[in-house]
Length: 582
Image (cartoon, rainbow, N blue to C red):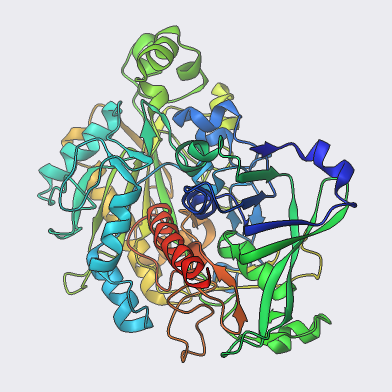
């Protein structure tokens, strides 16, 4: 059941409640966990979410994505001034809603390559997380529209589908790539072939509407009496007690302290385990506020140190990206125009509305990121280091939050006078090398943590983005774009040298939204690991982190699919531990 915190808050000061499992965060991992842990109807599960329910219409209409960034379902995180970006701050949209960041994303379904998971095992000591270990859990999540195969599953909760509408300009992008002699890839998640190549992206959609962990996993669990979902609740800290369980853990997690909308506090006890699923920013923040983290940092804020773990908040990774945008010649009549150049008129067209609401098709099913590919900027690289993403929408680099105007595209969609018709291509670091960190800015959980992305601190990332911009220009110069290509608006045709392009990247790069790594997994002997390979927090019994923050190295692609895989595998670990205790 979903609890309205407006009614819950009246009794919050009076009750202490007990559940078998308390899950913090209803994003990609939390929704999976709530479903799997409650399936037998015997174990009581409480899922806590600081955001709201996912009833906002734009969440479910794929083309509504631009209206979500910067809205009330976005945490709107910003970084500290970035040294390598001349002091600029970066904007990081994160979902503050059931379904988490998956609910405000562009819905891309990418797992990375098999080699990415070999790296987890070989270089980071994530034993049991190699390709053969994780593939069954990827397949378990999936309801693949194309049917079952060696690498794809059917019958899982999450629908993975081909796009129901591919913009004509995106088709021109694919034709131009082929004309250039680039390799085609018809399935970026087929581990039997190299990831390199161009193609259309698969998305998490069902019948043309966005599919999220909430609409897939959580909705299936709503009718269970042993599941409670509470929105609008902030978890203040994890309750720890000295352990008498023996072993290497001096503390045991017994529950959490929460704050509801009226500021009332309540302690909620977990009979079996507390599970953090807040993501790369919130999970390390909550650990540190609870006394688990780098001792020196905690002491500087007056937080009593329970477990000295230097790795908490370290190893932050994300896909940095920059864009090239073009105005268009716009040769079409008005009736066709809104199906090619997305604008407010796209959503007002009776044809488009009918096609979406009746047939589940048409431009409103677009994720605004329909085609692209993965490429090597150096043939000697083991895996593709570059991702290109074609966007049939004219974008401008945002001088304030630097996400391109995807962060404020909703304003552009409704401001026809100021936005020309056109298109954009993003150059994205598929496997970044720059490493950042998250630390506390305050002892108040309601204050955002200090985020240091540290982008471009490794020169290889800057080189990848610059080479990507040059590749984009070659693709767009092909005859296949002749009907659409106007002037290059950003960075502008006068920016030709590598030095000019590098300067442009530094002043305009933005996130491609795949934040991971700040509670990374590894062997217990690894001083930088926060959780072991069973996802248990070192030094604390009955406390696990199960979300994107445990990923040791970012796979080549978006982080949603790997996070849900981790949650499926983590749920089995939790149930195994439950059975052993029973």
